[in-house]
Length: 435
Ligand SMILES: *Cc1c(COP(=O)(O)O)cnc(C)c1O
Image (cartoon, rainbow, N blue to C red; front, side, top):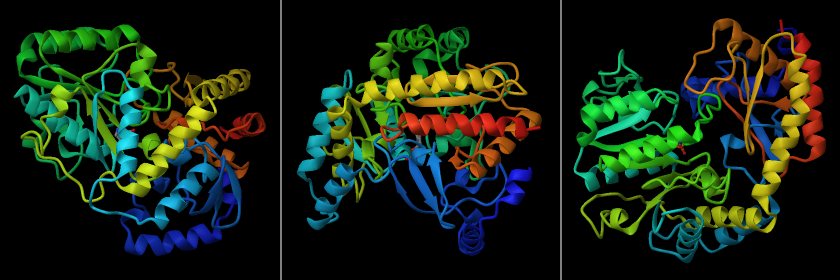
């Protein structure tokens, strides 16, 4: 890794050393630690538009976008201005406020089938609450998730596929009792037969099937519409709720998320990231007949001190305003298509196989030699080693990629043609450096 040893990051290294003493692994969320690519995580001091600046004063083209929220780019003046004004009116009231009503109205108007929304402070909370609600509504305990989909870190979703179809999931983290995951079945993506077989045996006991309709947490595992349609049909036949986890895809791929894109309406949907415009926000929604089971109307408890926070709601609203005003979804699709067109010929000349996968503003370079997967596939050491080298070669050329071969790049409205060309040139220069 010549590039990474040449490049030194003294200020980030000093901050990391301090952090390691007082924060486990030096980070507040594991993927930030660069464990998959090696080296010192960059400490970011400021960001604007499509660029981030690190503690050593280097500025990079940012392809991470804080992992999804920053669809308008960093520190968008309209979002930052709205947040500043909201701050002046108070940071939290612990009482209802107008911006949460306005944002809920926006979700209801945007997303198919949603009549009511409840706000929380993270995607994890949104998913956890939606599942509790689905269990309450159906009076059933079992839930189904798919290998390769991430739904936050709630206990009963930290589950790895067991061996064989008949088994329930095993905890994928220490600290999760097997009893907690005993109610979670794990299925493979892209496999209608496996889903049908499970429903044939257990259908009447399954409260909910949860899926990222555009799985974007294990690379970008694009699903066939027929597969999602089969899940919609199976769940309907068995009185099971279908939950679309749109924490990444919601308000990113279309105003109505993946539900709009595929023309498939789930029973419940979860949101996060974009909907908070860079502030800690999650949300879940569905028809009134289901949502009314939530306290205080119903018997299903769910709450949060900072839920519907006025500053966070304002950031979300301002972000959605920017998207509406600039016909953002069309622009993001154009930007994604342009980057794809620029990158394809470069990747075709790469000294090893790299496959480009894109949906709108989500773009993933799959290092799987066997081709772009549609279900969870583990990279070999050789494949992930190539990515680690490319990551550092790109960093040395001023491009900040997600520090893991399993993470997609996030484009924003701030990514201009010049940025895309810069990315392409850096990639063309960096690829031959990978051995
Ligand atoms: C990020 C993510 C979550 C968890 O959201 P947090 O805000 O990190 O808790 C849940 N589901 C999906 C699909 C995500 O990408």
